[in-house]
Image (cartoon, rainbow, N blue to C red; front, top):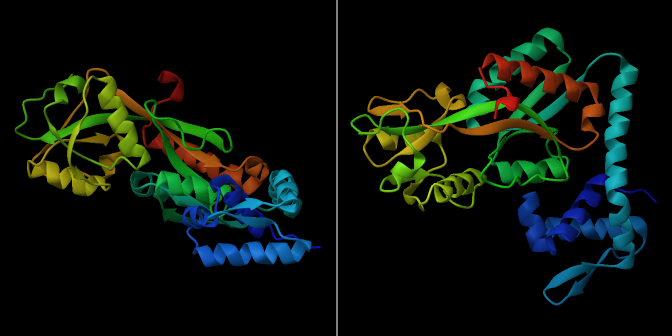
Length: 307
């Protein structure tokens, strides 16, 4: 009997999500592709791993046994990769890093240069991806590492099952039209009457901003749901509302007509790099984390213990 780790990951997501369609959406597969992987896994073990229950599916006794051992097997895969890298005595690997836009523009170039200098055998590919999707892709081995943002006003979507390394604090400021009356030292609660330009509530960032505003005593009036900072800043310049901009986002220079205004009580978020447990046993993964740490320091991110 030979077990496919990829199919085990798929089974684990079906169990976690409670059905094929939800697992397919999470994995960015079609439902038929998920069903085919489950059928292939059943053929590998010689017994069904799921069975129909109403409109959904549930694990069979064999499926439950596989789930009980899936985490152990997937962790063993990481340890095996680490052992092979140690045995080679040279750091050679192709790794995939999930990034958000500001990190891709401000941190990634320095990380690539750092690796080219110190570990030329490591090839680092990147993909811009939403935080929630990055967490799913990490869990299923489609990413090796991901840069994420930890907001104090929103629960982390990765809590409990991913290893997280803090890289630094990123301060957040108000981005307002240049003719706005807001001055440095503005309080978040003073913005209750403003029209807002921020991400939708389904994104981690959008949820975090809304939670921070509610703690300041108001629900933001979001007139324009925009994910990209460059687009949001252009809309602020046109007088359509206010948004937030961080120190890390300075790489996107605000256009004429936008003023960056610091808050009285600084808003902060923590930039972190996440990976599967045991992945940092791999020397190549540790080398990328070290390069990310150096890039964050050079970019001026504040120390995490200053929060």
